[in-house]
Length: 420
Ligand SMILES: *Cc1c(COP(=O)(O)O)cnc(C)c1O
Image 1 (cartoon, rainbow, N blue to C red):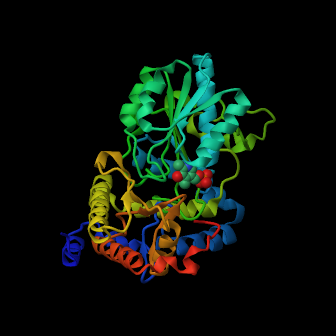
Image 2 (image 1 turned 135 degrees about the vertical axis):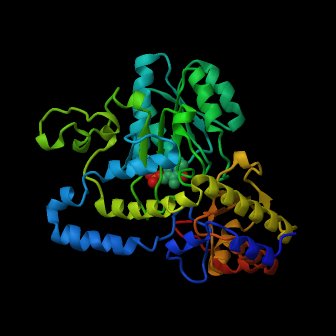
Image 3 (image 1 turned 90 degrees about the horizontal axis):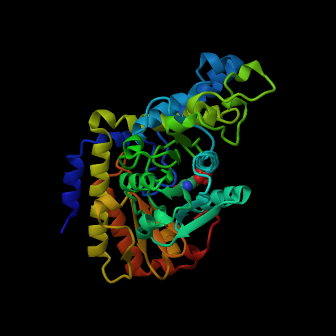
């Protein structure tokens, strides 16, 4: 059985330990929600202030050129590319995940309509994140396509054989369960059946090893306010395989996606490559904050990069599962996240039939911040950049106390807030 001194020894031997100092985490908080909103990097406040005061205040409109504002979506896109297995010039940081999904799914349907006009189905999972399903529903309505939803991931291979499927749209790591798809296997299978793949990497980018190019994926989008620590509402990203990027306009063809926006011509001419996936003027302050978030990940590169992050993430989640099962046995908890390393991301989800929401609130009051996902899930994200093994120990200890004392039943923990 793992003890608290064991956890301390593992922290002392952890090569990623110094990275914790890159974050301004409040005293007394164990933050297990970096999968929903990454914490504040120490560098962000001063960097954003400098952009406001010097680049905006002094530089004024000149800063679009002199401070490099104009190039930021592509420059940050290139940095994100390294974490998702894409090449330089293939990614833009822009807009939201929802909006980017609209753009890439639309392009995927255009390609399918041109190459295989009989195919009109978008295949996905009923358990996918709602915005992904809503965007797909909207697009299917516009285009007379069908959104076909599967109940179980195991049903995907057979469903790909139907002959009418145009696009397989999946979220790589499921937000509610933490289960992870085998991207390489599914992308290869989809390709064999003539189906394009669109991947949502919201819970994968910066959290697990990704190789979009190696997997033969076609399109991807993802969030940067989760594991990329870009700040609330930070610009998301979009990747399009270079073989597809120039084939069609995307539907939100604003002036920033034009080949020569400052010619101000009345006729649209798309920029070559991924630049056409921009739309309008970019939120510079948010992009600057995202740059600071990417710096925190890049700080792991000399310490072993994604391989080191992934092995620590698995060690942290393994420990959390082990301790929760030992120390909270008999408390009605059941593990939802798959145990197999290859089948899970960087979060652990636990179901409890009664009181899941209130238990999370009671934990938050004790400084252990996780979140609740309806109807019965306690969700804990583990980010190896700033979490240690001792944190895992204390988190489980607080959970044990909340359950054993019945503290979660207090009325103040049972009032629902708007954001859970
Ligand atoms: C967090 C998340 C989103 C969020 O999309 P926004 O447009 O940023 O609100 C989308 N998809 C998945 C799978 C997510 O987990």
